[in-house]
Length: 391
Image (cartoon, rainbow, N blue to C red):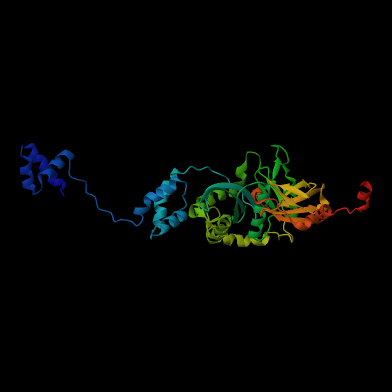
């Protein structure tokens, strides 16, 4: 490779009118080397060849993840390891760190609460593959404000009944109940929240709160970021769990992986704000949680139906039998989130069915219609003498 001294000689000889091939012969290089040096206007820049990094083959993949909003180095590391990466997390963090300026951020003043005081709840949505089909998944996230330990549950809708079920599953996972639950102003919990008044909560949410012994709280209108700890967890789950796991065999499989991930990953993380392992911090909070009630709250859909004269009720596009003595009466039905149908006459449970599609046909328990069949088969007997008299 030419040195600066060589270039200066080339330049001098060229200025003197020496042919390039003669200059090349003088320096012991190829004439093209001389030609390139003159065109370049100097000697080639001296560059030291860098040693290759284990991360080099995966940098394009990292850039793609960053473009998709995945910034957590642990998640990125797991993705690279799945592709065969054998290096450590340090060089991954070193690669990601200078690029963090690309992330948009907003400053927020955090409000800290004492142990056992508050749980924040929120919903998120994501599209992922379930049984090979792209499916919209709704997930409810419930976060302890003190320790930042959280639980989430995935389902197919975010109505009131699923909100209550998600809360109960989180209380059961955490092993207790907080003094208050902070919700956004969704109609599943808050019917009305005047900007300068007291919120009007959904009566059933109040009933749930009374059963479990917590005080319902609502964010101020247009100030949902007062619930920022939980909203941050919605993004955390999207950028961690649903990036680490991208397909599921079923809804049950999804929730099984979720609880496994919570124990192995989320509970073991060092929280960026409190600078402490979440599980360790929760151990101090756990004694402050109130115990669960002896009887679990029923989160079923509650509706009323009028029984037809054939002793069937209409529920979600199909018909289900009830005891025939209830024909013409109004009954209460409870439809569980597991699609179990229970029918009540007053406080008495009179029928149970598993919901079926209309294609499956009407669902009948023979004993329900025993008296109807007896009345149908009952035949009046007359003496033949009545007919003889006519003849």
